[in-house]
Image 1 (cartoon, one colour):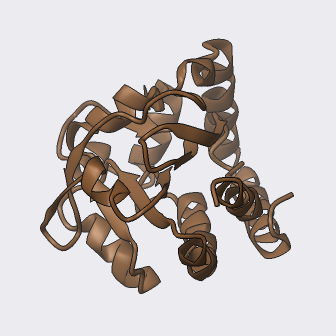
Image 2 (cartoon, one colour):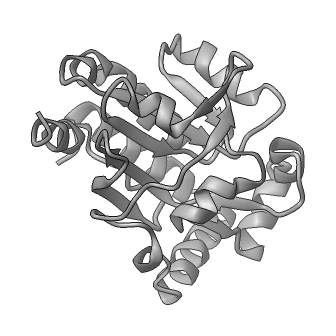
Length: 216
C-alpha cells in the first residue's frame, strides 16, 4: 500500500480532476489506449540492464549512469514534467524517504523530458538534493520502454489547459513516460520496478525501500 498521506493526496487530486468532464474523458481514453497496446509489458524488467546514459543535470553537469552507480545502487524514477501534479506528489514523497534511501547506501535520481530550466524549477520547489536529469529527446525513456506518444484527446486537453509539450520538451514529439520507477544495483541491473499506464497510480515508497533492503 502507498503511504497513507501520499495515497490520500493522489486520490484527492484524481477525484478533483475527474469532476471535469473533459479531463475525465481524456483520462479514460488515455488509460484505455495504453492498456489496449499492452504497452507496459515491453518496458525493461528485473534482470535487464538499465540503459547507459549521459544526461544533463539541473546544475549544468553531464552525469553518466556509471558515475552515479559508483556511489551505490540507484532509485530511478521517471516523471512527466512540472505540469503533472501527480508526478510532483510522488517527488514530494520520495524526497521524504530520501534519508532512508541514503541509509541503505543508495541514491535517488529523477528523469524528465522537461527542458529549458523547468527541471531546475522542480528541484528548487522541492528543495531537493537529489539529481534531476533532463532526458533530451527522450532517448533514455525510449530505451527503457516507458515513453509513448500522448493520445490525441489527452494531448488536446493539455493544450487547452495551456500545457505546450513542444515548449516543455524542446521538440514536437510529445512523448511522455508512463508511471515508472526502477531500483538498479551497482552492476547496472534492474532488481525491482514499478510500471503503470495510469499516471494517477504511482510507486509505493515503502516498496522502494523494501527493494533496497534486499540489496543490503
